[in-house]
Image 1 (spheres, rainbow, N blue to C red):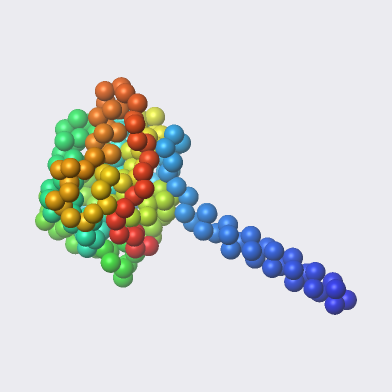
Image 2 (cartoon, helix red, strand yellow; image 1 turned 135 degrees about the vertical axis):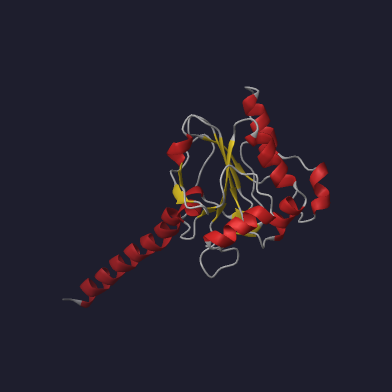
Length: 210
């Protein structure tokens, strides 16, 4: 084989390697996008029950990513803001699932028994105990990047909101009363049959510990 031929083969392999390098992150981090179908999921919650997207067909569903050690999660749970939202919308027959995608050994990872204790100590008012997504498959499918990161899915199975809980990325809970809550606004507008003014926003918080 000529030197030119070998060089050509090496260049082709480099080209393929380049494609793989750029393609893998895209495959690993697809995302839930407003206006499109919500990515499927099937995860076991802390009580051992499997929760799947298909279980919520024809219903409203809110997804929230959680890490008990994240200051931004503490902001919304320590103030009672997140629990109040969960309770308010659960009373309007809206499902709310809180997801932990921290990998084993990473910050925020919880064994099922620990997750049940944290749910109790945090007065979790979600529709089920924490979904335990330790392999990160659900988080990556949704493109969950931070805690909290919020998604709203309508009864048709479409994402109608993706992003931050509100418009203030301070970790100080004192800012909550003056913040515009995107999740509440999107749910209130949807329930009233009105258009959602802000369907996406930049999520803020701690990085999900995949």
